[in-house]
Length: 418
Image 1 (cartoon, rainbow, N blue to C red):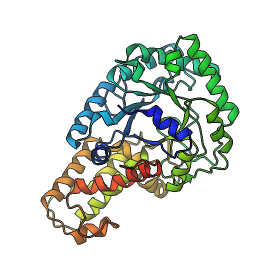
Image 2 (cartoon, rainbow, N blue to C red):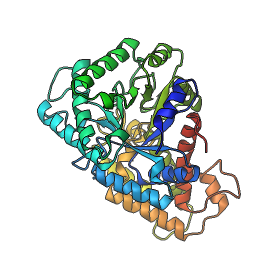
Image 3 (tube, rainbow, N blue to C red):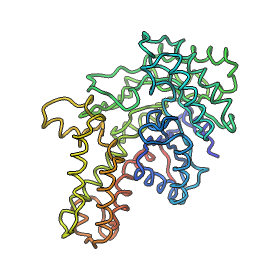
């Protein structure tokens, strides 16, 4: 079993060690993550969000136990040990039901947490920060009370509560990402950080959760990093210094940084050096996946294939027909929106890979390229940067190697090497 607390103490002592947290439900991205885990033996965190996976199926159609079973099967196929994996639940709370009354939304949030804990998820991010059913913005104390309420459920229903670790705090974009392009970001103040800690400590004590409090390992704060559709807000270590120093006054704690996708490798390393132990990444994984798939589609177009996949056409049509996943996010002229739909950092296209028509086109693309011998020279045209003699020839291997560009750089930035 991975000893998270030992790694955290090393980080707090000045050793630049951290852990990437891969938050994705894309099968090809998960296969790349698990292949990397099998090859390196490194501890690997894989997370599902409350919107992806919940008792209603989320947008993946999976419950927490479904997701665990699925990842277990993929890990077996990849040769990765489940002992080196930490499965996490992100933003566990009432967010999917925030338009309902507080009583109903919290009842569903408790059931969500129960299912995650019972299924065997170990890393639990408690997030009850959002107003429910038209409530005014919540106080720190109200957020902490609801978080403690959810923690009590996890403690009761986990197979072994002593194996649970908790993340608290919520000063990050809502699950799913920003709906608008922010102009600027404010680093969490030391005062707000301290208020989060104190109100949660008091709430956990009231609920008799002292043992659970000892297993809180990280606090979500805003270090000044995020990405919009077209811009990346790069980490500024100097601006985050007061916050970074403040964590050392709280025994056993580090920070968790959300939305670190697309940060330069130097910025990711600086985050870890400033006690942002967990680095969350999601859309960057599927951004790389989309790049690889589109490169394969362009490669396919060069070959005399009688029944081509026309994948790019299919996905464009499906996004126009079903605009629910991007309509409220992208603004501008038709030409600008068309570019954003496919190429934006927010990667709203990731929600369409499970669409039946898109999935069928992707399967046809892969089948076509598996059946048609493809020269190394042609592959090199669309997958630049690979060394001759080491270029994968199978389409799935090309996707895996491209997604692993993201995975490799996160582990390197976190100071984790085989």
